[in-house]
View 1 (cartoon, rainbow, N blue to C red):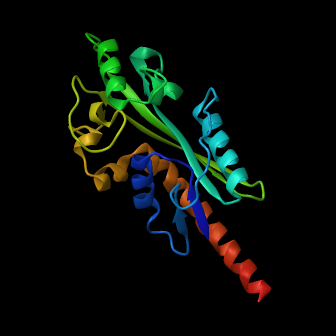
View 2 (cartoon, rainbow, N blue to C red):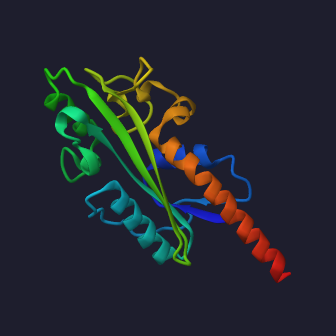
Length: 205
């Protein structure tokens, strides 16, 4: 079974390859293997944006597509930046500027509670869709730390940990991340789809 990862974000691709690498009989394809047009994220929720991307890329490529939308929600900012996480400091995505802006807005704020949320959407050419949600709770650090990861990782300290996501290895992050939680729930779906495809091929022959 071929599965196209519906993102051009190298950081997400790297994590998804790690998270899905143990699935048998599935070939992960990326933008480099099957180019697709960028999809404008016009939804007001992570779910809407994840489905927008998965449906559009699936329609364009006629391949099963796994897309997602993820972001950071900060309690003291009433859930911001939310769906605008990637473009928080401006239309052009700039992770460093986003982090600087977030720290500025939280300057002097005692409540640092935050959470990462991911909605993963799997869309098949025959109009079948599956969505799953993953959440990672934590807090915002006073200053960035770490060189790994991407986005707000240098500022986010998961609950029960003392270092930021950017100070963790990809393996360590993938044990606890919001993306891992969503993908873990999709794996049984993918396993079932692989079995369905194998059964269909067996009937043909």
